View 1 (cartoon, rainbow, N blue to C red):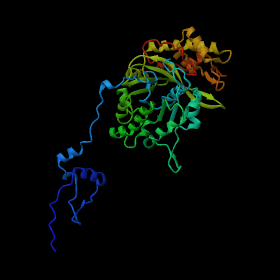
View 2 (cartoon, one colour; view 1 turned 120 degrees about the vertical axis):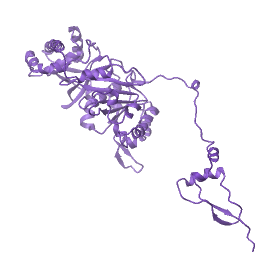
View 3 (spheres, rainbow, N blue to C red; view 1 turned 45 degrees about the vertical axis):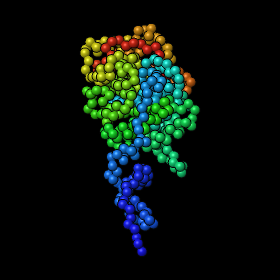
View 4 (spheres, rainbow, N blue to C red; view 1 turned 30 degrees about the vertical axis):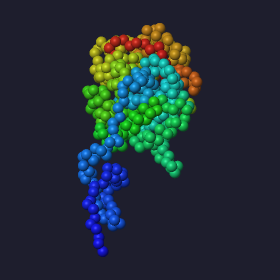
Length: 443
């Protein structure tokens, strides 16, 4: 029987290459060909067996997409808090421990839900829904009381607590793995979400938070979520140790990619031996990066005697974040400044004792009377702390009131007792503060 010689081996066609790569990429399988009914083994196909010309032809369907600039319609930035927190963007709020970052974030979230006024006096034009995920604070005893104290509309707030798989099994929500699940869930309630609070933002990173590539991969899902739903994302972070003399935006703990991917970086700091704190722009790619605002973290009581804290906003501050933080973190001040501070505080204490001597007074009325008396609101807040004045809220719909404690001390004794701290309580600005007509307890 005559058996003809098999034809010479021919390399696979371009179409064969594409099909084989799709099925057998990263495998050691051999390509089998049938010749005259006899199966023989062809040489294994590897990437190196395809010439450069063949690879170029095989990739003819792959290309880069170009968009003509004239085909794009310009769009304005959509703001949650104008100039500070933008919709569809990632904002990082960083600061040292003890400066009340989460309380500040809760206060901002409350303003968004109730359509109140922002710390700089601007009106929240469009109330929105808020999502909150926190691994550091309990919902029932910490986050919810703070929201109530800040006057939040609780019907607009949702806590992100768990992820549920196809079998109905619940697991703690993990921002590093589950952020995509929010894309589906956010569509289930009317109005979507205007703000997502992640505390801390480093929890969104699967790998090493000090490696730029790991941070960029981890944050990309957060950035994509923000853009897709036009939702502002506010991530809470800390300052790295030993960074007090550095550029503010670079003080964010972890890789510099945190600050690089965020369109805005806000920084917070607390004065030594004082309740005075500052919030400032450290970086902004989409707005002015100058200026800040003073704030205070105040203890308060809500509901059935539940003690919590809330943020009270003070005066606006001019200058760069570096200057604002330097002023807040300094520990030495001139004698003349201390003397001026002492006199202003004494006047404010006298004003408060006179104003509150007959019982509780609404905060809004104190604001008006302080302005008429020539007392800056920041100094009135310091006087409140020195005298031990309490801020109380009568109910969910009632306004805030200030009341002297039952054991209120004589003003001279109060000032003498606290005089050793006055030099560390200097204002964080070089010019007299501008009085803020809108600074009330509800804000």
